[in-house]
Structure formats: structure tokens, C-alpha cells
Amino acid sequence: MSGRREELAANLAEVRQRITAACAAAGRDPAGVSLIAVTKTWPASDVRLLSELGISDVGENRDAEAAPKAAACADLPLTWHFIGQLQTNKCPSVVRYASLVHSVDRPRLIRALGGAAARAERSISCLIEVSLDGDPARGGAPMAEVPALAEALAREPGLVLAGVMAVAPLSMDPGKAFARLLDSAAEVRAVRPAATMISAGMSGDLEAAVVAGATHLRIGTALLGGRGPVVM
Image (tube, rainbow, N blue to C red; front, side, top):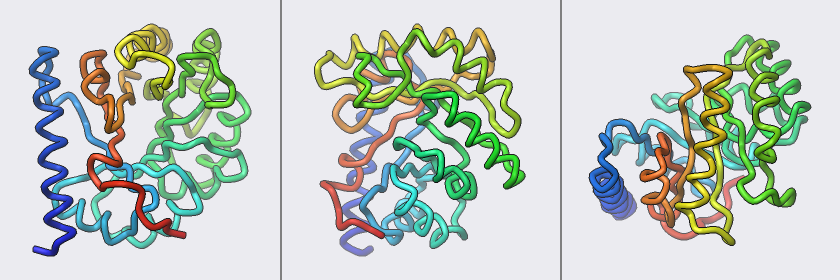
């Protein structure tokens, strides 16, 4: 086993132990919590190693990095998640490899994604990114706008309303922040009952996210280590 594979295997085991412990504390079944490996700045070779270790979901933040990485790993049984802020002009590229987009936060993006998905003859699952503190610089839709966005997304051909996503603001306790996300999750389910996905929690706050009901955790640093060499 290569040194890097050993490192990733050890990190993955530790992350899974944390998830299992958090689920036990919250009275949840670990099978209801999915791990998305966030591989931004790390090479396709790490994605291959993670796939060998059982990872099936991979998240990326930037299309310029994600598109070639996904192409290099096209032979692997992976589901690609686009989790970063998305510009409308990048939608045609993103829909070619991503099955889920976590960062839908405005009507114009819904229209651009829907059009790109239709042209690519693909169905893309989408999460509404919710701003838990209302800071426009951080991205995400204000909580008051979530119901209207959910309605628009549910009507858009080529897109499937799947749930909500959020990042806990540094200024807020993660547990309290993620508890607020549950209100938006309920509003989205009122539009589409099957939209049960809650993408919340990263390396530093996954336990709080599990307690709050997260179904998908976006884990980068705890799994791959500190920021790696940027892949272009």
C-alpha cells in the first residue's frame, strides 16, 4: 500500500468513526448519513485512491478544476457534486459531469442550469443553498426567498429539487445555525416531499450537522489533509 493510500485510509477510518459516534449520540442510523469527499486542490490520483477505499461521492468547488478531474476519472463509479458558487456561464460545463449541484441560490441560475441540462439531455438534482446569516458576500439565498426558489426549481425542466445546503457562518454556533436550516428544509419539502437531502457539515462541524439531521457531509481537510497543490 502506498504512503498516500495509507494516509487516506487512516483519515477515512477516523472520519467514519466520528460520523458513527455522532449518529450514536443523536440516535441516528449511520446509514442515513452520506460522506462526500471534497477533493478541491487535490489531484485525480487521490480521487482514484479514495474510490478504491470505497468513496463513491466526490465534491468540487471550481469548474476549471472539476471538469478535467472528472474526465480523468470517468472510468470510476463516482457521483460528482458541484458544491461551490456557480456562475451561469459555467452551467453548460458543470452539467456534463455533475449529477448534483448544491449551490442554487437565485432564479437566473435556475434558468441557466435548466437550459444547460435540457441541452445536455441530463437530469440534474439541485439543492437550494441557504444563507443562515443573510450575508450576501457569502453566497446563498436569504431564508425568506427559499420557498419561491423551491417553486421555481420544481417547475424547471431538466432539474430535480432535492433539498437544501448551507455552510455554518463563522459568527454562529454550528448547532444553532444548522437548526435554522431545518426550517428551510421543511419549506422545501412542502413543495416536493421527496426533497429530503440536507447538505450540511464539514470537517470542523460534522457532529453538529449530524445532530441537526444532515443527510450529506462535505468533508475535505479531515479526509485529505491541508490544502493540496492546486490542480488546473
